[in-house]
Length: 209
Image (cartoon, rainbow, N blue to C red; front, side, top):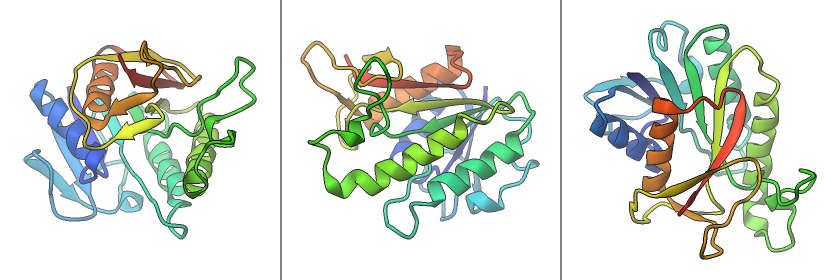
């Protein structure tokens, strides 16, 4: 399995690279800065400078991009759109490290986590930017995309339990009534999806078991 991980130097990206290598994947990491991953195959390049040739021949591409400041939040849309454009019409899957704010909290799918009264104000701009990118991604019928939302409490330093629940568009709680997952377990779920999943043009979510 040939895998490209874009924005691989981030906390999620590095763990996804590590998990993929442990499974025997042939991994190429892409990042704007010097290589901080465990992959020996590395390309230093901005996302928006990537070309069709850069991503040709991969079975899957993981978009692990994240932006947190007000001036960079629009990049969630522009970078994802660029990746879609260069993968358009190919058999290469595009898997996106998504957000939890856009998960639905009702069966009618009219209310999202980010619209709830307890959602922190400081995270609302980020949730809105990621929701916008997801909305635009849903319109792409020319790309084999899968958007994977983490649980509400996405823990960068959380333990690797190796157990998770695969869910859909709605915020899902585990047996302890928690919406929580570590980056390490999320990486497991991401590689599982690449290996055996088939959620083409769907958003799925994961929560610790």
